[in-house]
Image (cartoon, rainbow, N blue to C red; front, side):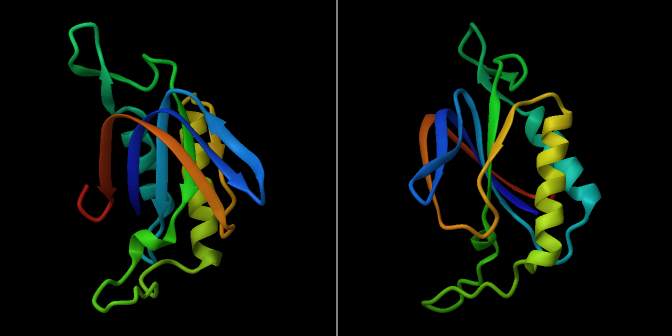
Length: 147
């Protein structure tokens, strides 16, 4: 699995003109699923992200986690994280097919919720408009193949 995690002061996702999900302070997570990914990796990645300490403490150091700041998560499926960029037009054959990706996307969301966090999400495969106010900015890239 691959995830791009951005610390935000707010974020939302709109589908067909209607806001489907929105959060205040927390993480915007763009999540891609590869064909070799497993449920165990989805759970491990969710725990890693939920326990990440990238919010500033009173001394201005990145020392607080999502729980300490009352943060939320907006999770968006993002198969393009597995793009093959060898040519001028990206290919997406390295991304998991929907029958495998959807259950792992759902498992990741459930694992974040089971950590005690409010989770909002987009819709797998939908044309989504994602808005965010990046905080910092702080943006981190995760890949379970190297974690």
